[in-house]
Image (cartoon, rainbow, N blue to C red; front, side, top):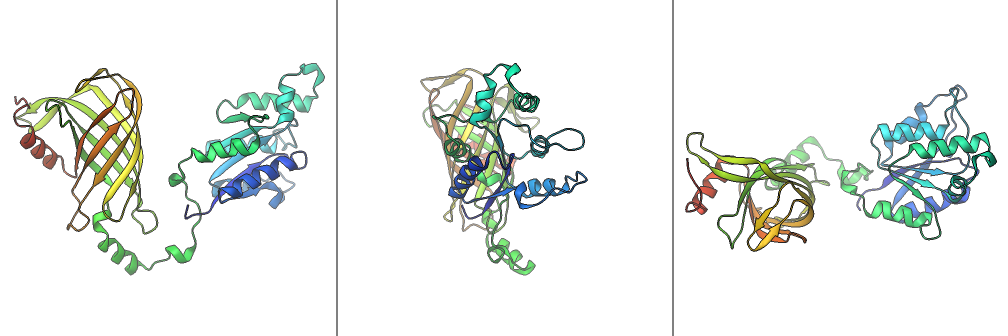
Amino acid sequence: MNKIYTAFISSAFESLRNERNMVIDSLLDFRILPIGMEHFTVSTNGEFSDIQELIDESDFFIMLMGKCYGSCDEKGISWTEREYEYAIEKGKPAVVIRCKELVENLGKDENLLSDDEKRQIEFSKKISFGARNVSDEFPIKTIIGQFFNTHNFAKCIGWTRIENTQMTAEQLEKWRDEHRAYDLGGSWYHVHLSEDDETYIRVGTIKIEQDFSPNEYKSLHMEGLNYNIMYYDTQKGAFSENKLKYSKFVGEYTLQDNGEIFGIFNAKRMFNGSFNSHEVNKGTTRGIHDFTFDVFGSQTDCLEGEFHDEAPSPKFGRIFVFRNISDRDEFLLDIRSDVIERR
């Protein structure tokens, strides 16, 4: 990673000191800086803006839950609960770690618990997503590692050294002019073809998201839709797509200096069918896209490459992607003229 990321740690400070140290050590392994309430003092009048600002500036939110509900504001809501609700409201990637002392209380008779401990259990039960229990099999370091190893850091803002990004308007304009072939953001129109079955034709759209700046332009996010075509409508000058038979995919891709684009996508197919000799069932699958384009051309208006879908519905074929739908249709009518029905 070329950036430094930050994580806001929410917890009762004194009672979970050891657990916080474990989280901090794990964060530093990922080059993620920890930020917590102990770095400042909440004002006595219940002001929450300082905490909100820290959460806003953090890339991640990590909450440690012990057996105690903790200190509360004037409305009787704990600071940790307010922090959690605010982070979720802001859409921060979050992981909630239920420490062993809380996990043990979850199995106890409530009559043996204090009112404060009961409130913490109630709060814990409200968290239905992203909560993990600490155990001998899953210590804090393992939970943190699993969370960050599966996270897409490309979607995080992070912090970068100013000297690496500071450019004058003239320098930025010159860079963009020199790298015009790399500006791939926007809407594209694709066709998927099989080299073994000329009747297999899938068309659709791809939206490419790209931050076209010096430090970010190599990371691409793609979302696409695929449809079966029924025929070419000569009056409308367009392909008629079967809207009931479609699939959609989303993936993260990396752009290389030589014009190669490689990425892994997740796809969801909404119907059963066939591909060459294989049955293809509806459901989810993963796959690989491998594109190339002419980096020396005056403009980038066509990508071509291959697609590889994994089991249980393995597929392999060619994919061509065009800036303009008219170029896509002209190409398809030419290369599959013998099998496309015209009406």
